[in-house]
Length: 172
Image 1 (tube, helix red, strand yellow):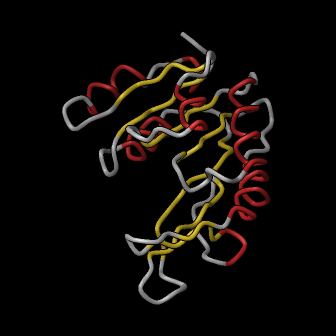
Image 2 (cartoon, helix red, strand yellow):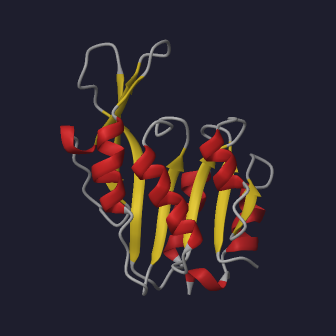
């Protein structure tokens, strides 16, 4: 067993749901971030926001607005990843770092990507989700990180994967 786990899968397969289920069993403080679709700040676009992983109330502001998409020409806010996103990844050694989710939006956010890889190099346990099937240098580095075990989730194994992962040492 390695220090960290990455749950990889296609869109809407249950990656975030699995993380949420696993965290109900977690006895540690939760650090990191979660990504969510919010109300559109721009007409015709879906807006995406990053929130602290432990936050129960989610705000939508320019501070945490990471991108917009209309299905054709997405817009990404690299500076938000490199400032707000990096600050979400600051963690104390008594906790666990959640990264939900890593994908292509942060592809140009060099500080953020560096911080993600630094967390995977570190000793604070990480549970991350990643979009499967995307071939980017960053996601390949995450999925092939020597300190991370990667679990692929799909509709057929998502319940059994919870049973497999729920008693992992990094959650206790």
